[in-house]
Image (cartoon, rainbow, N blue to C red):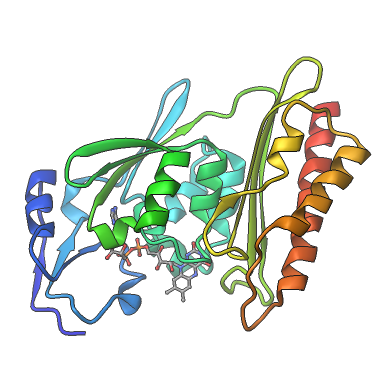
Length: 275
Ligand SMILES: Cc1cc2nc3c(=O)[nH]c(=O)nc-3n(C[C@H](O)[C@H](O)[C@H](O)COP(=O)(O)OP(=O)(O)OC[C@H]3O[C@@H](n4cnc5c(N)ncnc54)[C@H](O)[C@@H]3O)c2cc1C
């Protein structure tokens, strides 16, 4: 790759005008640089935009688009499920490099933060070129049409609601050797009412499907209480998911593990509910 120019805009407007130039590409943590197409003339560096921060109030955390996955992993007020997802990214140098904006901008099958952010009902602010705020459902529909990275849009902030009482979120990931890229991820987040009836079931599968998606079994879980019969029906419904294989794990193997993860997520939620 030949790069002729490397610029450091100091304002969003300056940034956006660079992005309009043909052959320009955003540089955040730089870990995806090797995967970028060869047609990059100008690297537009986000370093000077002051987008690396985590701010909290009673209801939410606001995370700047340049915040590293290491900072997310370390932050004590971050939901434990998101810290677990960040910790799955790999070794320490990678954790320091990968930013939350970069992880969301190009949804490679193996990325860890996006499915958990979706399950946690995060909201994403981006410029394309006007400022827009997306719910997680809207953001993933928009990215499925075309990724943020390919649109040369700019993610500036992610809003993560604080975990309410009567809720349980978790992240499960399948790797075949140590820290390698994931074969399957399942991000879950359940809430329930005083009668232990599930009022929200967010179950996002990624890596083993073409694009991150909600599991079909969410529909039978919402409005039910968790018991063995419900768990069995949820696991059975995994049969209808469009799982894709890769050279390391077959469709059948991934489907089997997804069923185990669904069961485990519901069992853990049931345990938390009982205690
Ligand atoms: C060997 C290896 C293993 C990896 N394993 C994992 C893993 O297991 N799990 C995981 O989650 N990730 C993993 N990654 C990281 C992942 O593949 C991407 O490299 C990473 O998400 C890119 O983030 P970045 O901040 O480094 O972005 P950069 O590499 O700097 O940017 C890449 C592109 O993303 C877009 N972009 C970046 N930031 C923004 C923004 N704020 N707004 C809009 N667009 C933006 C731009 O198009 C930019 O050109 C791995 C990377 C490597 C090299």
